[in-house]
Length: 131
Image 1 (cartoon, rainbow, N blue to C red):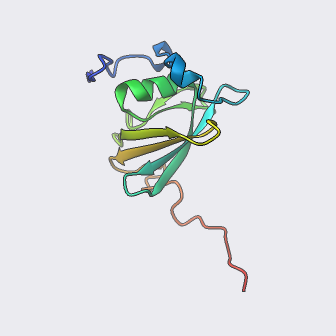
Image 2 (image 1 turned 90 degrees about the vertical axis):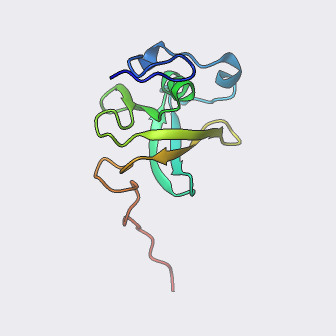
């Protein structure tokens, strides 16, 4: 199934074919591996997950409005929800003050975490407050 977007992009497009506009590219500080961390939060500011993006994944996200990442372990692009059905509709994308972290606000369909949990941070606190 191909989905069309207002930009003319479709779900059949390959993220590797997308380029960041020069004005945005100049603002993003990718690490030595060409990646930038992307913190993903819901519209009510709940942190859902952390993933990585290269310039193509970020460009595809901006062009299509779908959360798109680069899997470091699989060395491939990952469009959130393409296999699970748990899509992310991107509402906003911002850079931090240094330009080395992306903050995405999304409308999450279903679980954000591959474990099936709403967030990747459910019940994983390691903090034990001092007395």
